[in-house]
Image 1 (cartoon, rainbow, N blue to C red):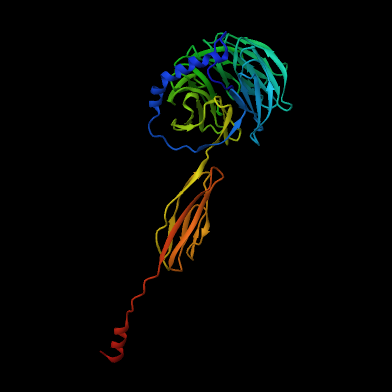
Image 2 (image 1 turned 120 degrees about the vertical axis):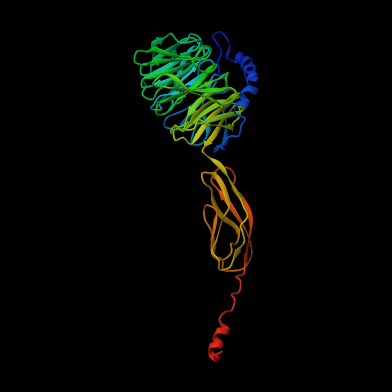
Length: 440
């Protein structure tokens, strides 16, 4: 899979497109913003760290073994390597001019990096983190994806795809017949089809990887299709339409668009969780990621600074996003929310069974404990925040509870629980007893 935002046409330096792109997005903001301005469900995603990588990060990909992330940095002509375990940059690798797309071989051994303005591909040995080969391709290569021993490189300046033999490190075929300004590429899990976006042609070309020819062209998309990704089961392609603020869903068996999802301004790159339940779409000029639930097709925005490329760890726990404006990579914990804790216990009575619960939210589910003061004798607090038992002592009890789940800061709450004395039992039966005793 390759990751990038809109790239320049041939003959135009990579930096020159920014002013035009910003104007394009400015015209879209009010329209696309309205499309998802309605109330949306809460989504359990949290930015947990920012990794400083230096200027201009764009494309990003994570090795299948989950050990390293490779981040292309356009203007310094380098690739930064991040150790996933420590979230630290371990090396900066010099490559060609204006690197953009990146893809990793299935054995995690090599990274293929497209260099736009030098019209070649740098091959990086991921163990030594050095460039071991440079392969000439077509004009202005952008997207790249790998299946088996073949790397498919999209040449935006030539509207062609170069097919590289990854064993011999040479181009074995060039595929033509694509649309205008071919950009990104994704390959089905079975390796039978490659889908290529044609950004200026508003279409997607479908390549038969057996014959390496264009088998069909899909045209009923939104405007300026850019990034794309395929679900792990190979059933659907999600295509980000840069200018229309939508994502098109393509059925890979029939090669037809089956749905169009409004996601907000400037959708650019796309990544899908390994379980296929969530699609992450970067919205660079809106400082957010649109998260699509693949079951309901509902959309939830998550705030992330200036996201460009996006990649998800093989275990589906984190999304890594290039923060182009600030020179960072944002790490988003997927399905994680910091804990919240609220509520005030109701009053109890000595000798009467008691049950009440604090309101607790967070993902993973927080653990709630007493961290100060004492509960009334006879009551206990469960890990989920439920108070239960039978109080044995009257009084007013002040205590502190804390909720933690490993994300965000622990949350504490001071609580007061009043236990009333048991009511006195009425005396009954005395008159009947004495009446029987004296025969009255």
